[in-house]
Amino acid sequence: MVQVCLNGSRGAGDGAVVPMSPGAMAQSAAEAVAAGGSDIHVHPRTPCGQDTLSPKAVAATLEAIRARVGVPIGVTTGAWAEPDPAARVEYVRSWTVLPDHASVNWHEPGAEEVAAALLDRGIGVEAGIWSGTDGAARFAASPLGPRVLRVLAEVTDTSPETAEESARALLADLGITYGRPVLLHGEEGGAWPVLRLAGRLGLAIRIGLEDTLVLPDGERAVSNGQLVAEGLVQYGWAQRSS
Image 1: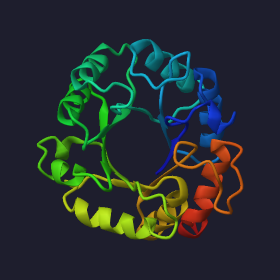
Image 2: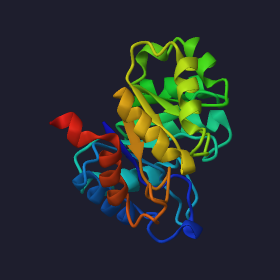
Image 3: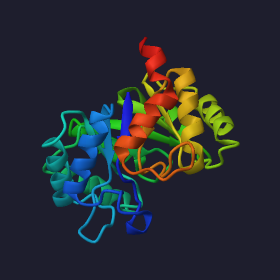
Image 4: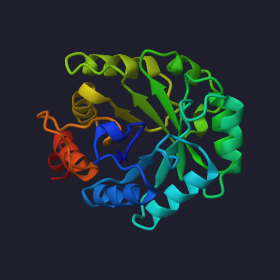
């Protein structure tokens, strides 16, 4: 699986290639899927560009993207979009258009309650386990663990020299995944080394402008589609498919 992370929490200062409006997200998603992406992760935005879990923004984003692609689409439930755990749960309960899945960062306060609310609505849960946090230990003790869609092993080490080592440590810390699929990804300087490691391990991957703005050679990426195409090369997809 190749998940495309369209925008993350990046802003206007990160360049015009980062899609901010529902229409721009939909266009970017279509290009990324055409390049080989098979799943979408997106951060809905307010008109002023802030991450939000509001029903109106989530609906507009999902409807725009679904009009262009037929792959599963997921959204964030990160605490930066709404710090109050109870409010995050209420947002999930108030969504009028439902994503196929949503990521829940297990180290954040209220993760269990948010995940339970998603499952109650029939929305798949991606368990975000960040390196450098107690997320892995909390997930190992979670009664909801066997019910998640997949585990997102998120390497927060941005150094190209040490990110692979950090990724291996995170996978070792995970230990218990309840038999759920694991998607491994890095960010910034660690994005490409971790993606290549995922290829060697045969794990699902994620790539897109949320995780990195540049190609492996340091050149600025022009689109999510370009990142997906290069990600498949780095992953070794052609060799695996032959």
